Image 1 (tube, helix red, strand yellow):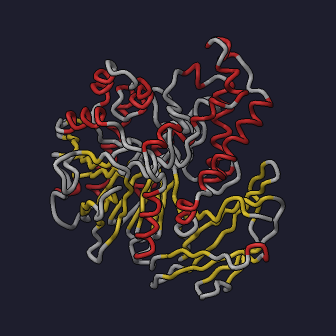
Image 2 (cartoon, one colour):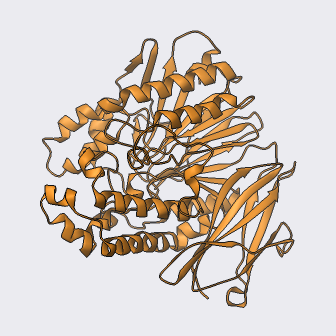
Image 3 (cartoon, one colour):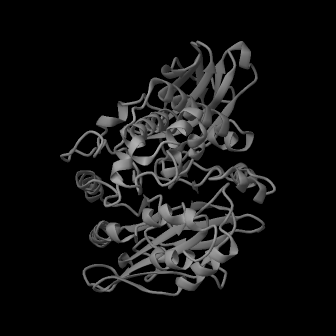
Length: 512
């Protein structure tokens, strides 16, 4: 049977000196194939039978689990399918040594919010090609994908959903999510992942670098979580969300739908099943590096980003971590960014900019989210100072490259433990905002925000430039050196060399 999609690699954590990776394939028809893998040239040291985790319309999704020995030496793992139909096909990925910090690539916004945006770029996957070239020169061990791995905004064009939209609002809110709607929506998301991820350029990276992915709004549809409560609680919105969530669990997390609902970090707050669905964030540690992957969509409302119990679970894990050099926190939407409230008022008089309104409500600096954001900043600063760990935020969403910083003047720890850098890389496929939006962003970039007494946030000049924002497609590489510094290299479309910022561990240069 033919391969519809795959292989797609996912990192599943370290355990008992093992680097755990899963491999996902979508086959056209029933299959019982053996995966062969190993660090020899033929990759035949081990075999795995895999398990079917989902199916749709004759297509079967299979996952294979690999537990790679993670000892002192780095290694390359070769793998292939034992099947005559795919004879000659083989792939590989790299695993760092146990005490080696991983080389990491970060990308977001892998698609277009509007098909018309494709006309704005010459080669939609040019930055994927660039990443592949860098990977061939020095292999990445992890690919972090920070949101909008697919764009589900065309869900509204499905005939069954379009008919529902044509009704008045009160009728829509009371309408049922019919079997016809359910079938069409489930097919839409399944087809979407298969089509977008089977493109040659992203497929090459998905097959050769284990991924850590977290969804954002477009993986569901634009602005999910920031619409009025009555919309989000209507049957059709709930049905679309469930289908998108199932697809997320299958394709981005390599899990059967529902399997992640009882994950180690889950929200147990009071509330209805829809009001507070299970939290899908995850946490990882590999040597001196920890990664927190925040789920900022499952529990989002106009007044909440993540439920309180989920936050407590996240930070209970964070606070248990000792001797970390770096803690990377994936926040799909930037924690440090110009205040969109003023930008909203400015854009309100410009034709064609009103589609940004839900994005404005999405942001951390939206008034209803400011208290939750403040708690996040306080807890990260407290951990950094207590454990002497460098904390760095990784963000996307905004279709520009940028550097932000949170700085605390409060006493209680090493000076540079009072600095949290934010590295924004966006987008790898979606085009940058137009010149007017960039102009307004630059106007606001010089403002220093008083987050709290003795705590400020501001945008920095983008490394090597006189501007705060890079208005071109980009992706980010985090490359460690022997001094345990992370070299943050933005690879920007049209630029031959990357833009670089160095992130020192707390014991390094003060004030960075």
